[in-house]
Image (cartoon, chains in turn brown, purple):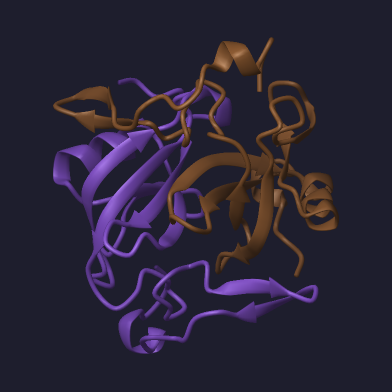
Length: 126
Length: 126
């Protein structure tokens, strides 16, 4: 059950999917420690590349991601985590999914409505 | 509509989701050229890190991924491509999804059946 963290300098991409709706909510990265913490706590923990530290999703917003199921791909260099998402949305910009824009005629267009006011939830960043 | 390819040495992760079933089929990487080719051809094209070249998914197997929709995340450093998948499966090991194993009691267990014989489709690799 070991993952191959070598291909990406100690990280694997982690796709987060809503276990109920099937919607892909976000993509983050895990190092070995984040992956172990995700399993130990049952809440998705990433490694934040910008802050260079572990980041339990929702630690600030309360919008945690409860693990329902962890899957691995054939090459063992990516994981798919199916979750129950707590709170109105995972995206720090106020949307249910971080993938809230869609390509239409060469432009990104919003494809889902904003569901909460990010300023009311985040003082700073996710 | 530009993507941020800088965070990952010229690549962005691309999550491939079946537009019909919602199943997450695989995760690949695109460089700017692969991303442009995906849009131009309407078929998912990755950058293969192991072979260091563009890789039109299905070029060998015929199991191409027809683009239905391209989404981008808030940070513009990951894409979600919703597709119609041609052929029995995307995984070169013979499964519909590359995420065919699930963590159960600390072990990876097969969570979906093999749907085709990879030896009959691939002489070599995907």
